[in-house]
Image (cartoon, rainbow, N blue to C red; front, side):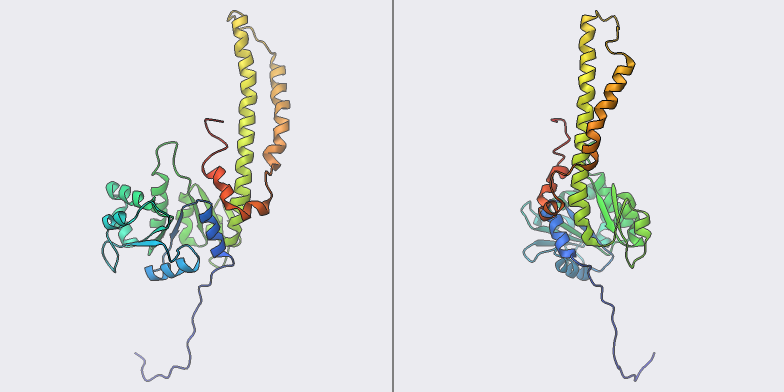
Length: 292
C-alpha cells in the first residue's frame, strides 16, 4: 500500500437533484397517489434524499424495517407501530424484502402495513427486487379491482420495474436511454411528470370516458328500439331498420363525439397543474363506473 503521501486535494461527484423534484413529489402526494421509492442506495443515504426531495417530512412517523438489524425493527413491530392517521412512512431494506417476497403470509402482512403509509422507501434493492415489489402491489387487489401502478426510472437498473408496471415512464438523461426504450412514455426531466399526469393524464381519462359513454348509450338507443319492436312484430324476426340505415346511424352518430374524444379540455393546463387534487376523478374512477 502507498504511504507517506501528502494529500493535496480531493474531488467528489455530487448526485444533484433535477430541477423542481421536491415540488413535483409534493404535488403527487397532494393528488392522493401513493409514493414508493425503490433505490439501490444505502439506508442513511436514501433517508437523506427522502428529506431533501420532500418525500419524507420531519413530522412523519418513520418506521425502519430491517428484521431487527442495524437499528431496524421486525415486520410485526413495524406493523404494530403504524396506524391509519396521516404522516405514516416506512423504510425497508433489500435484505428484509428477501425474507418477505415469496412468503404469502409475510407478503400479506407487509402489504397491510404498507397500505397505512403515504410513503415507502425501499433501499439496497436489486433491479429484480424492484420488479417483484411492483408485481406484489399489482396482484394485491381482488380480480377487477387491481391497483394501477406506474414505474418511473432513468437507468438500466429500472428496466425490469418499468416493464412490470401497467404504466412505464422513462426519463432520458445521463444514465442512458435504456429506460426510455423500454417505457410507455418518455420525458426529459422529472418535473415534466406534472404535465404528463395532471394535465394529459386527466384530460385523456375524461376524453376516453365521454367517448365510451356516448358510444355505449348511442348503441343502447338503437338496440332498445329494435328490442321493443319485437313485441309488435309478434317475435317474427322482422327487421325494423335496413342494414344501410343502421350503419349510417352509427357512422353519423360517431362524428360528433370524435372532436370531444380528441380535443376536449374541461379546464386549462395551468389550473390542472396548480390543483393536483383535481386528479381524484381519474384515481377513483368517478367518470366511468357502473352508476354511469
